[in-house]
Amino acid sequence: MTTAFLFALIGLGFFVGIIGALLGIGGALILIPVLTLFFEVPLEKAIGVGLVSIIATSSAAASVYVQEKLTDIRLGMLLELGTTMGAVFGALVVGYFSRKALALMLALFLLYSATSMVRKIRSADDEPAAPAGEYSIRHIPAGLAGSAFAGAISGLLGIGGGPIKVPLMYLVMGVPLRVATATSNFMIGVTGATSALIYFVRGRVDVAVTAPVVLGVFSGSLLGSKIAPAIRSRYILTVFSLLLLYLAVEMFRVGFGLHSP
Amino acid sequence: MPGEKNLKTRVWIMVSLSAGVYSSALLLALGLIGFLVRDAAAVPAGAGPGTLVRQTLHEHASAVLHLGLWLLLVTPILRVLAAAVGFLAERDHRYFGVACGVLGIILSGLWLALHV
Image 1 (tube, rainbow over the protein chains, first blue to last red):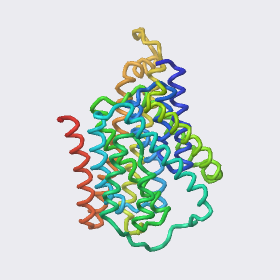
Image 2 (cartoon, rainbow over the protein chains, first blue to last red):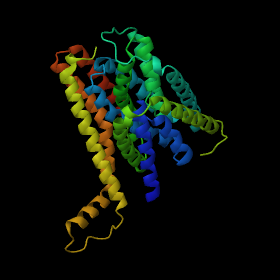
Image 3 (cartoon, rainbow over the protein chains, first blue to last red):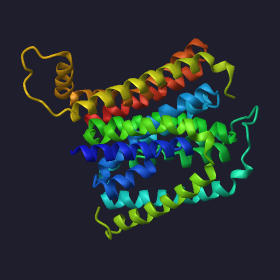
Image 4 (cartoon, chains in turn green, orange):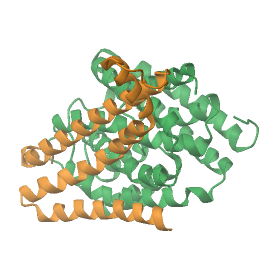
């Protein structure tokens, strides 16, 4: 590996870390397709990098959320029963999927996330400024099932699953949005680690690529969390949703054999 | 509802998160510095501390990187363990059981990955 490539990976991780901190996401949604499309990292290895990177962003942000008492630790731990089971399943069966099939699944998720971002932009003014006081959690079995699905997606595609978990908690389980976001962030690291450990022992994590990316993600997350209050999320969300759409198109092309990274 | 009831658990989780994350970052930085240090010739006689540190970093760069990544992977597991201890300290046996269940699933996954 050349020094230039090493610093390019650190730079990519740094950018992903900042975006992740600003938008409260893991960043693997950008990281995995960019590694595949522009850094010529095989998709299977890029997924391994993504899983490790979401641990980094989740751990950096989660300590802030826990400190701010936004995280519902008990709910997060309960739903982890589902997500970890799903993550184990996803990580164990990923080898049975072809690269094109994984690319198509990732493209669909990128498209879904892009449309979620657009909805978020439109409803940004309607979000409650502070979490509600008391709330009661409902539909726990549905929450567990949805969490297991999110965990399986995470294990297969290397992403955090936040776009599934947050709506699940907010819309289905009756959890205030800010608490749902913080709790999802708390969960993502554990879900990611569950799959990443399996990927690691099976040799699907390229250390030479992962290490500089993760170091960049650490640094970017720290900076992103400092500058987040000064940045208008609406602009970031708009740019990010356009980026996700572009990456979705490119991954569809990979999936249909029209683009060989 | 998140709040003061979780205080001990919250503190232990924060400490385990911070310790794991920053230790991992330090090891990764050291490992990458080791890769960038390219003069891997034999250590000359009377070498100073700077040369010795450079040589050590370069020779062990790969191991340090692996160790850093392992530490990062284990940090969320430690987070669950810290939560379990916190729940036990708060005498919340139900959620202590839940946290133990999560740990069991993670370890089962690791066992399956190694043996299946």
